[in-house]
Amino acid sequence: MNVEYINPFIEASQSVLLMMTGEKPELGKVHLRKAPFGSENIAVIVGLTGKIRGQVVISFTIDSALAVASAMMGGMTVTELDDISKSAISELANMIMGNTATILASRDIGIEITPPSLLMGERLMISPANMQTISIPLVIRNDKRIEIDVSLENKK
Figure: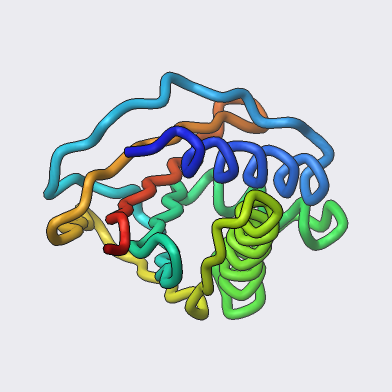
């Protein structure tokens, strides 16, 4: 997978999370993932089409989703994932992907993104078909983890 495709995801996610939470997330070790792979309890999936195609899965633990939703709601403590906090998490994914698309466009790599789909459950398994997956781990607010799994296939 071309690194010029992955760096915009890292740049956009760190920028958006800094803007929305007030803290720049720490980047963990970026690595390849083999499918199928497990996801945290909350996953937001966004599809990609254009010069590159694939999907991005942004996964949150319950604690990290609550921390991000709280920060996005002006610091109001969120204790459960209700419709408003789920909407905030989906919007965060939309913002990350929109910023990624803008960065890629500035490099003449045009993509379109699909609306985000939020999934919740225990032991979620993700199986991207015929795509290579790069995992981008981020840590925010006292060891709260967010995992961004980018599965891309070069469009021929």
